[in-house]
Amino acid sequence: MNFEEELNKIQDEEIRNLTKECLDNAPPHFWYRPASSTGRYHAPEENKEGGLVLHTKRVCRVGEIL
Image (cartoon, rainbow, N blue to C red; front, top):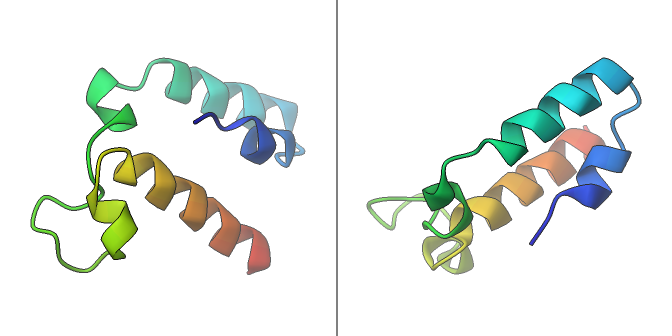
């Protein structure tokens, strides 16, 4: 899973580049851990391997809607 779609929606080049740098330097566990350590307060599919990435992408979508 990558964040190209989300990154392309960031109009400010400086913020887009900073966000890309943060993702490029995210710790390895960001890409495979579930969104919740307890299994509560997140959708079931976010509490599986890769759930933190899925949750982050969904938060981006909510931000876009708002």
